[in-house]
Length: 587
Image (tube, helix red, strand yellow):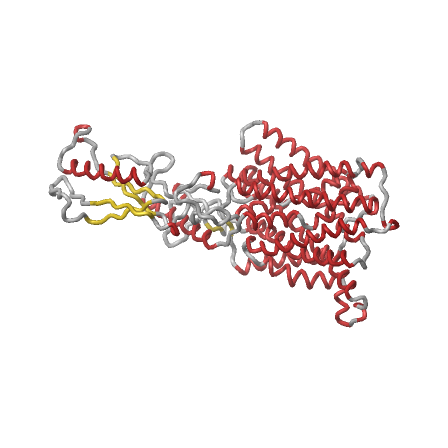
């Protein structure tokens, strides 16, 4: 809880004092108060002299004011004076009740309590002016304004306090799992399209760009005072920007849901047939060898319940399991690639060793694997103490580990299968390989726990775009209080987190899962999906919109020129890939 300290000033707002300074000043002010009340005025010929009581919030010290003891000097009452018998007593506030500026206890992201009162503005994700006594124009706020703003912020702070939060490790698990997903098995295919040399350069370069643009989304949100990727783009480019970002985010996340469901259909039935060779003759159980039946059972039985969570932090355990599964898959690809018989290996032409003709398609596949920008602010908000420094640490670790994993799988798969490399490299291995069968099982289960992350994004985009008025307060200034404010009606300010009722929440989640399920039942071309989704929505999310917003929100510098270059790069890749995809469809 915020405590208060009592000090006296002469008609102007004073900055909060330390405990020792406040104690000394309180004694001086008490003595000065007695002198003034006795008629011993000395300043400004008595005009304008007044005794002002200021209450300043502090997290360190609370002052308990009691009636003075009987031995304290008494000041006689008169028509122009009032007796103040106040004895300031300083006591340390209970550490367990010390809250920071956004209502959280004074802990860092790993749960380690820091000394009371030791706070830096860089630690605060957003700043709230609800406890300021004066507005930016120097006018003293009315008690009604301050009460309304305090109530709104208190409501938000209580909501934040109750919502589960994750530390750096859990946030890393969520982001790394969002990157190291279905896209990792397509990296050998990307190297086949670009060539070995070009593929390695692209993978490293795109990792650096993606790392920067992920952090750029959070920076843009702070610069614009918004709390979502959609709101930032809308702040910069209005309604058209909101439409563009909503379509791109939704298309990429939904494409991911479809891809993950396809992987489940490619992996789990093969596992069942390998375990039970006579599965087709086992009556009702023979349905477990059917791709469509397996996708339906596993997606609706495992992924769908996880999508109903409202908080992404609750998927940290599932994300940890998914990362362990990916380690098994990577190890399997590396080991089994060395054991593939010569007659099953592919050949490598000079173009495949250096630079091939499918560079733009390769960029699309790599981008699909690395783009998690639609999850960035969700993961940032799930941090127990969300700051840019902590989020940068999570981003660097996640993209770095993901690049190493993708490079390992890409080199192992491509150098083994060459021109025979498929969109899903696991399909290049024999169906009766026991280790590969176990890897397929792990990969299928990994997709089942990753699919809900994409469903989170789809749902958030839909709610933000279509239900923007169903918000809970997050950032509130007293100046934003409407003139027709009704104390019986909850106060809601702009720039808030969308919330919908349980029925609508379940309806939106169910619709997305069922739609993704339906599409995955009718197609199995994973490579084409990687190319199309990666080259369109992924380029918009990673290489176009974040730099454009940064250019809009900042003054011109060398960083803005870098941002312009990234925008041009993303636009060229997107247009080229779309033209190639249309030409492939037509001819």
